[in-house]
Length: 266
Image (cartoon, rainbow, N blue to C red; front, side, top):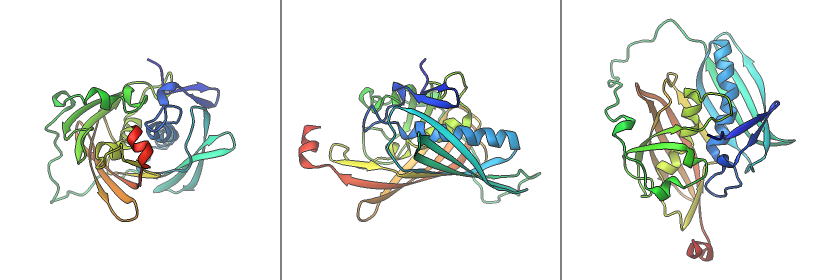
């Protein structure tokens, strides 16, 4: 299976499988965020620290080009580290990830109000989305989806298991953290609440807060979207693996009505 990116020395060339929903020649947001996460994943493994927060600022559309990442440790503390990864298209910065990592402690307190962390609907119990919905983007065609609540083609809250089947980078396995980040970008799509023939919506940023590391390749997204004023919105999602919830996601949304001529043509 063709990978999303192919390594070329210290750079990564996007393949046609990286194409997103708004144009097949532009990167899917999941590909962008996951490629930056790759550096953070390695830093966490080498340092023994846990990833606690990932905030992605997506500044510019990215074509199917050759990219490189640069990593800088902004704070190297005994209990917390802050790192920054920049995604570069030549001299142009496409996006940035700021990561918080913390040192593990010996134990955690008991939460007397916590609900049992159980998963009653596994991927095997879910249903595949409608065929046309799976063609949302070239990238999405490489993602296995199993719906357990709602529907991708209908507005409203929904819940779906997702797994990227193609390697993000050729020759490398997709780690649970990469799977979690690439799935998180679909939160707003899973919980879309507008007719996409009449509206476009983007998330220029996304933040993930982890309270434990993900442990499986399948990631469950349970998402809902709110709409505010002046085109603003907010998507909130919980991510779970086969053992239960492990992270919360927030996406700042921006809605814009399509012009009448384009809406009618679609």
